[in-house]
Length: 440
Image (cartoon, rainbow, N blue to C red; front, side):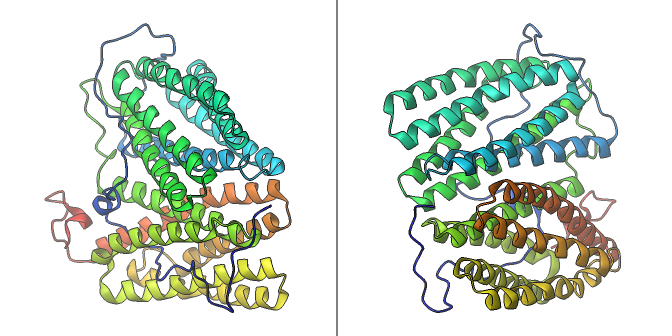
């Protein structure tokens, strides 16, 4: 990298998150962050069009299957936003090898998205979707190159392409969903998605890193709304009703945990990579990570109670501190400090493993928790070590798998909370439909 390393003073990390906790969530709190822009895509019927992309509509009657479709589309689309943001930063940083690795990761994500669309709507629809989707990916890449070169004419050309694309995409997806999603709503949603990505790139190029990461977070969150809308259109019944399990409390829990924990790991990647390369965005990346942490803490307090929340917060704060210390040690080529940070990180899974199973009333074993968190830490360390060595291909591959793994952890933590709810005396329980979300 050509950037100068952010100054440090001893072992004080000005970007260090103050508190953190990777655990529970009340979904209503998780989806109401002030200032975040929703996807704008809602399941509003529109007049039928010629069905150039349409396959027979998939009506999933089993609630579990419908929830799986939702979670898959949310996960893949959210990942797309993060990977696209990173790819667009590469030309600004003048890192062609990074761009190549980021592009490979984005292509893998596109394959996953096309696979999901194909599973819902059929292979021919999936292939048509791939061609359409790649149009906006290519235009966004062209914009980022023009931005890095200061070529205003090329930037305008790319934006004109993206503006036209929004309407084209809206029409095609409305056809794909047989009018269950309106052209206007889809067009608005993808236009907002494009705006988030372009604004993130513009801010990064202008060295307004706080704004760049704020827009990254908006882009990520917005795609979860898009995934939910697309899944709803795919799984609703002939009379327009959604399967019972599509948006019930357990589905909301797993969706929200997946969103927040997926964002956690991606921002951790951003922050540690910036630290080891001395990129001036390091402070802003870590502040964004802290913002994600605060969202989780706010959401979980009424679920686990003050004592458990305080314990988890303490453990996770130590985890974040050790991770930052490791990144600094890698940047300094300090083997002893790296070893010390690893030792601290190795204690983290066992520390949470002592607490989570009891919170679940035995529904989740300590071994399950420890194994999942240990793999998470190893991925964080391995990707940043590879990144520092300039092995962007390996770093991106590990980070890609790390994002997927965090969604597995989200499922494990959802099991913890559901086990806790089942073990508690019901208040607003099954008879009222309130379940664990009904508790206060």
